[in-house]
Image 1: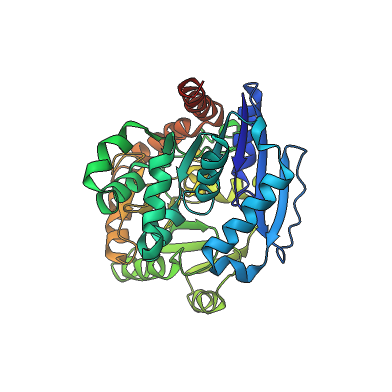
Image 2 (image 1 turned 135 degrees about the horizontal axis):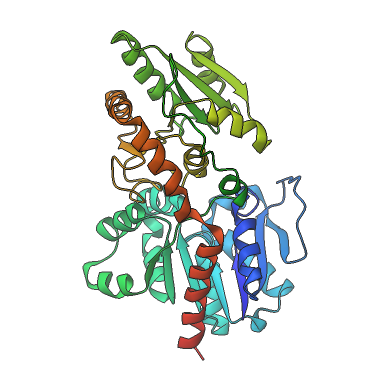
Length: 372
């Protein structure tokens, strides 16, 4: 089987390499077509299965049909598309439009994955593109959602009633996985006793979407109630104004982002609860990294990580702009910290890349069988 992976998100999401490597281990041949704009300078190096192209200018991003025509022409000129059994578009709008055109012109079936940007940007705000999104969903041989929350949001808000059953029959829930490093170094020796003061943690970009200031407000509420708490923030500063607020809070400690997983492991192990109430989230791999080190997690309702576990299993889902909900979630976790810690460590197993790759390969095989 020969798969064309269409993935404009590859360069910014390192976990894709884990997925493609595991798929290759199953004997499946792949070409990963990665497209970005001409001014995007990347410092990564890729193996020979990855074709990185820059077929359009940055300004072309704002003219949807033009951008996709440039990408499509570049793909068909530089890749022997007739050699593929199927294509996998790793987003609905930005990548799925290319896959749909390949199907129409060359008869190549495609699988489409629906991402956070599809749910919370394109469907929500790009009203003129909703019809295109429905067309891409309809013509896809199979559909993949990373979480039940995103699937339900799309089906409840945007899918016409007469198409829901048809789409549901070809829909799969397949999450992202976590790098094997975190599973091999799972911390089963973590003590069930929380620190004094309580240590909260965040790892990721310091931007408006990650919503750190709501967590700050939650910390202040806890302090007002007599709970001693510290909040450690590790990440790249994307919005300086947010960092300036963090610097003014005596209970906040900031560290620059590090790619050194050994350093991050020690950080996770020395904290008690992982808190990331993002406004939107495709998945949130740092939740799973934290769980692998025994940390209960607080995540956002109806976003990518929500619905993988029952509320109150490995942590709690909260409304992104409600600090009191974060406070109540933390207090509930503290009432049964050993249980939350144990379930967090066990819960990592569902994000196993080899198992996820097998599920993905089964989807591919079903498409190939349907179109032989």
